[in-house]
Length: 209
Figure: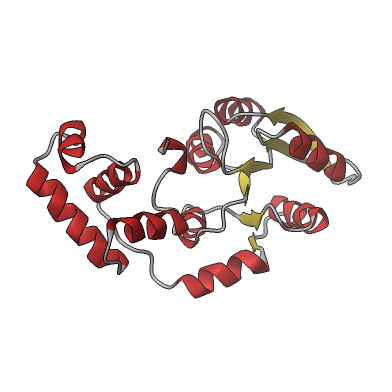
């Protein structure tokens, strides 16, 4: 009996290419495709596949959000996350969330197909390139929810006063968080803070004009 697979990616060529590559395997049946995260959740809930292969960056919901939400409805489904973002913080988050397969988009298609088969059959597989990044990353920087909000505001270029109004906290508190963020990330200027945060995947770059 073939493993039932759901594919989700917002890039049509990637979605079609992966479907075609997997189509040559008798052990795989692609039961549905999605081009956004919300549709992916709905399809996984309805189809309850053996494995879901998710792009990390999708409209509606990220691959990580899809995995977390879909598990509520289909706890037996196993997940392969594929991302073009090699930031250690992002990869650590995916790994910690329990993705059974983890790949960068730069990986050869044949390797991804092989991994999907292995994950669908019950194995865990982290691509060597991802494992190297995880091994080199060390400990994740521990930021509070408020620190992340302040960091995002800083990355958007908001002044302390504007950030204060947006977040409903005092200007002094904003400045204190900025100082603490610089200390935690080991930088000495706002520009360096934003660069380091982007490199480590600590901010949502889609929210930056």
